[in-house]
Length: 298
Image 1 (cartoon, rainbow, N blue to C red):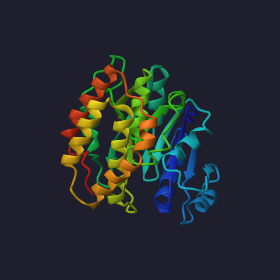
Image 2: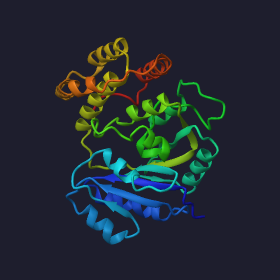
Image 3: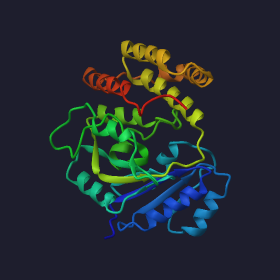
C-alpha cells in the first residue's frame, strides 16, 4: 500500500501535543508518505520532541517564524510530484492521499484538490465545506468536483510543479488567508483547482489560538491581496465593502492600519488580473458575502 507520489508538509509553532498527535496518525497511514515538518521557531520543545520520537520525519528549523513560507522551505525538499499540506492540528484519512494522487495523475492541468473537512471530536463538517461544495465557478467537465477559486492549505494536495511555477506562498502575507493570492496566480497561469468530497481530512482545532490576531492578519491580507491583483474599481469597491461591514473595533482598526502601512510594497508589486479572471473573482466575492463561514469576527 506504500505510495511515494505524495509528500506531506506540516508547519508548526508551539503546538507540540497537537503536532505529535498528527505525526502519529500520518505514520499510521497505509500510503506511508514522507513527512517534512518546518518548525517555526517553537519555544516549547517541539523540534526536540519530533527529532526524538519521529526520526523518519525530515525536520526543518529555519530559526525564525517564517509563517507560510515555512511550506516553501519544505517544498524545496520534496522530490515527489505532489505535496499534501497539513496543519499541526489536521490529519489525512487513510486512502485519501492515494486517491488524490490518482486524480492528479490523469488530469495534467489540475493543480490541486481540496478535501472535505470534518471537525473532531464531533465528526461534523466544517462550515467552510458548504462554500467549497456550492462554489459558483464553472469549470471543465473533466474536473473531479466543483471548480474552486482558492483552497485551504490545511486540507489540500497540490502538484509541486504548479506550486513552484507561481513561486509558492508570498512572503509578504506571512500567514492568514495566504492561499487566495497563490490560488489566483495559479488560475492566471491556466491551472484549475477542485473540491473533491471523497477526500477527507480531520481537524481538531488547537486550543492555542489567538482568534483576534488571526482576524487582524486575515483582514490585512485580504486587503493586500485585493490591491495586489484586483483592478482599481474592484479594489476600491471591495475595500469600501469591508470598511462598512467588518466589526467597528480595535482589531479591525489595527488590520486597516497594517494594510495601509504595507501599501508601498503592495503597489510596487501590483499585477491586476486579466478581465476573464476578474469576472471569476467577482463571482466568488459575491458568494463570499453570503457565506456565514467567512466573517471577520473573533
